Length: 90
Image (cartoon, rainbow, N blue to C red; front, top):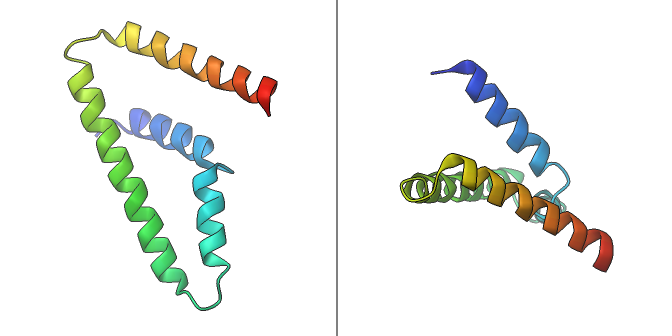
């Protein structure tokens, strides 16, 4: 395993997930005193693992047809558009 790649991906995803709607939803579920915190943790962690697996599978398939450079440009433009939308309409 390439630890530099691992740490780069870990830090990027970790920072992207902080304070997003997924974390807020998890906090909401965990705030319910009647619900086991272990259940909330295991369910939310499992959901993130499945979502990441879908991302890896989709990226693997898409990369067979579209170059990495084009995918990076599309992702970058997408993030810029989302940021502009949030600034303008929120």
